[in-house]
Image (cartoon, rainbow, N blue to C red; front, side):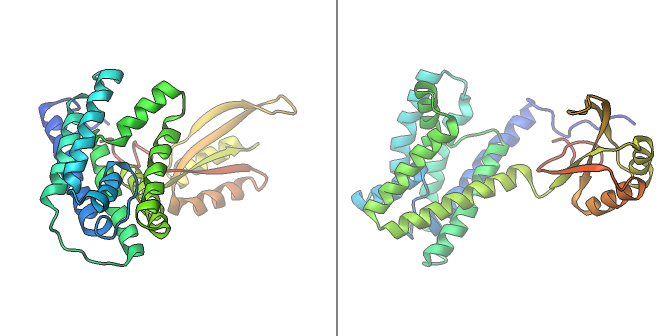
Length: 289
């Protein structure tokens, strides 16, 4: 059977246009969530948007202007010190997100409950960021600052991001209240998890590693009864040094019980390791983008 070609070729003008559309749509969703949930309830979840919420309380300046004032110098510094690898999309993202914040400034506020605002604001920002990342874009801000800290301090990138977000949340505790900072931490956690869901989806699967003395029978059961492919890996016993075949098979969540039943029916003494995986691309699973 011939392989299906992707509907949009990577690097083509259509694909590039699609990525910019994702950048704009994601920025709009982030901005709407910021103006409807987070900013009106004085919840700073980190990043330049969190700083703009804090400075609005102190200076009464519209957050969009603060974001432009911070995003553009950080971007120029990153381009100077890290090179032009961020490309035009980082520049566009640094400009377009504050613009989206500006045009959605007067959206309604659905709730003044800070917990609901933190949760739903976090979901919205995470959804928007996930879409931006799907388009291989960036909204600039403290993410680029974290890249600089990572390069020149030797700290890991994740820890560098955590430092900046932590400083923003601590500042919100000083300007607003410690309770607001705690809600900010909830919002940041929800944002992170939502990004993962957008990036990886809900298509969780299991990877099974099977070691048995009845390899042939289990192989046939998986191939013909479960209708799944498998890969055989070469291994050796750590104690005996004997060569062993390790069968690796990927199954969907609803196939796990059937797999275990099949293996047990062939060899009750089989050694089975089940591990969760977030995304599987290929025949029988998710199609390549």
